[in-house]
Amino acid sequence: MTAEPPIVVVGASLAGATAVGSLRDGGHEGPVVLLGSEPDPPYERPPLSKEYLRGEASFDQSLVRPASWYADRGIDARWGTRAVQLDVVDRAVILAGGERVPFSRLVIATGSRNRRVDAPGADLPGVFDLRRVGDADRIREAAGGGARAVCVGMGFIGAEVAASLRAMGCEVTVVEVFETALFRVLGARIGRAVEAIHRAHGVTTRFHDTVASFEGDGRLERVRTGSGVTIEADLAIVGVGTEPAVELLAGTGLDQGGGVPVGPGLETEIPGIFAIGDVARHEHPVFGPIRVEHYDNAIKMGEHVARVLMGEPAVFDDPHWFWSDQYDSQIQMAGFAPTWDRMVVRGSIEERSFCAFLLDRSGVLRGSVSLDHKRDVRRSLELIRRETRPDPAALEDPDVDLRTLIAGDAG
Image 1 (cartoon, one colour):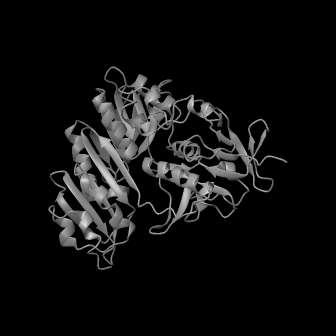
Image 2: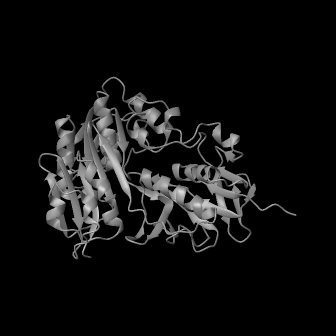
């Protein structure tokens, strides 16, 4: 009798490593293969812009599981192995070099890649982006001795890197095309509160500006902006967003520009093939099609797909939660609200201690975001999941425990 092919997970990401870990922790004894293009075992990426970048934490502290765990649990883990093609007819993953790895079921956890700035000199030594542990190592080395740094983009990664570089003694200038920090996610009013924190820590900001060129004789020496300003620089870190890594899926019908479409249970239109983490465009039961790049989402999708693979089909309806540490402040977010019709604030945005609740036109709570006001975002998660219409006066009142609003929801 021929043994069933293994479950194969492509992408030794946090999501992929969590999936194989959850399979073994849940009692799955069948063969499992984990393929990762990086030479290192799976690790958590959030420390790369914070503790690890600043030299406050070791690489081993960021590992998802100890390096020896995979072999000890009988997982065929292959680091430095690049999958280049997917054969959905004969159900095999084709590796660089031609080896075919058959699968009974497949989990795609290939993550995302950084977008690059299309500007002359972007390939100069001293111009970095941050995605992998080696990137953080190179940035830390270049940032030594009070270097002059330019952060291109002030989304979450750019803002976290700027904060870490200031803590390391660098002079930091931010160049951002939008009007304030984190504008695309938080809007102008909250973004200005985050901007104020960075200004208070000595960051120079240039909003409504772009990079025209990176310049230098053999290495970065200056950044010239679209408005004509020249910024002397020893290093530049580009953080202008990401895109899903879907090249493996060319020709399968799953290679869509917005990520890999998956249904409510994380399965693609091809039975037995799933996608999780940054690469997955999930048909969320509350938010509709959504691609989420958060740490917490990667873990929960990995755990969920493992349960599905072990025979517990269910809808993945996590309302999503995210945090960002910058200096001694913490931003938290829950839900998904790219736009909103009403913002109800508990606390004070101007005093930079608040939770803002984002409601749509019918009064449904779609998201929440806090700055140094930690408790309420977590307590809003179930309200968001249930698509409640809470009383705005109760949301605004700091004496009201959000957990009591679920039973009183009228929607």
